[in-house]
Image 1 (cartoon, rainbow, N blue to C red):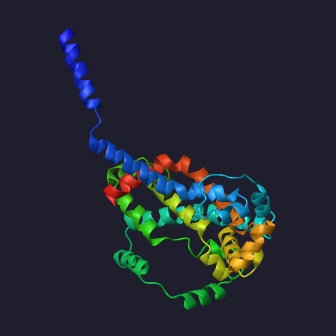
Image 2 (cartoon, helix red, strand yellow):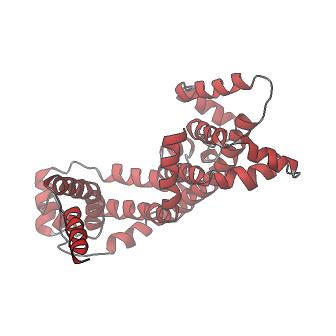
Image 3 (cartoon, rainbow, N blue to C red):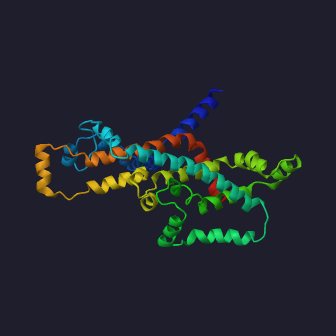
Length: 304
């Protein structure tokens, strides 16, 4: 009995022995994590730093001072609140409508038969590789009344071809026997989609909804083209304009004067404060969808 316990203990100790390869892998992963996390760390650090400290230290890696004035100034920027509300509306409403349209389109393409179905599917795939061009697209948006219209940032990007094909392929991987059983019990198409296909496909839908929401939240290009009214510009466009407005070539003499006189110019720190504020919603949403997000990535890699 003691001999068996001794062998089991020796075997357990051998299995816990860490090899040189394991140490190298751990060090590589730690280095990779530091490289990925450092930009976010530096962003928060600079957002609460004093301007003079940043000028004197090109690579700012530890806090010399903590000043929340930049965050106060960020909320006092012209149209900041309006831009934040526009981004929230575009992200939330756009994502919900996009998921409804995507699941309906994927269901029709995967489960329903209609004339020229194959032609429509390959035409959708074709549009993924070829665009209409910026100027014709802008003229169409203008004719549809989407200039200075908040729905112009919601409706045009409503359908993402890649996400549509991804969900369509996932629906096709679900055995049709489940659907047939529901039809025998009297379920119609909407009931089958809502009560059967969508719950089964929750991981992939959660994954693409997270990707779509991040795209909508970070989008400034669409706002720059369609939103000519400053009160309707999204938050990322406000940040871009702030970066451009503060990217000035002051020269070394002017920098020395500002450094010696300790003039408080919060351009870079203010930019990082606004970037931090715009990053917070994504960091808050991700933990809630992380479980489905990881599962969706794995399922998509196997079944897509």
